[in-house]
Length: 171
Image (cartoon, rainbow, N blue to C red; front, side, top):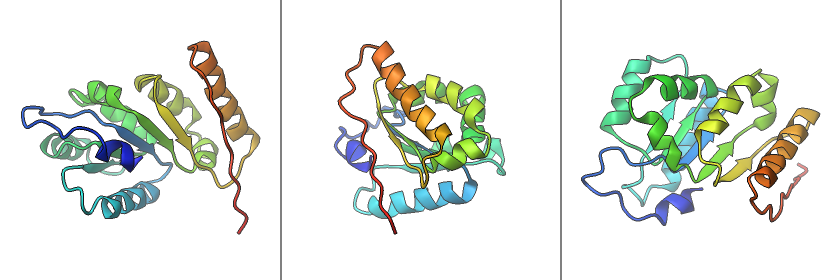
């Protein structure tokens, strides 16, 4: 995902709010903070690429000011707070229309924790032409259904589904 952002043309100085190119949705605040820390480590030599975290349990107004003061191309979010920003932060819904890569981290936990109803409107808020990466420690029926749902949507939009590949690493 970081490669997509690094290969983009630099953000112009006159562009106040660049599009969010990579959106990572995590089930918990802790996981979101951890994912953002790792992204920042990987971007050590790319200071022009911004990473922000939006999570519940913090003041929405503080996050809004931070997002506007330091625009990012990579956003790591929890579902509820992402929904809050889409509905309440000026220009936010427009910025996520630039998403090229959507990452659903710990998809099994996103569904276990009851975020399924929140995911549908969030997925509708980002472009249909995107790469979607779904990571899950397990593949329960809910995750399998989610995968088949993505394939169905791609076919309905007349997109070519090249492949959906699952990798399992036994530890």
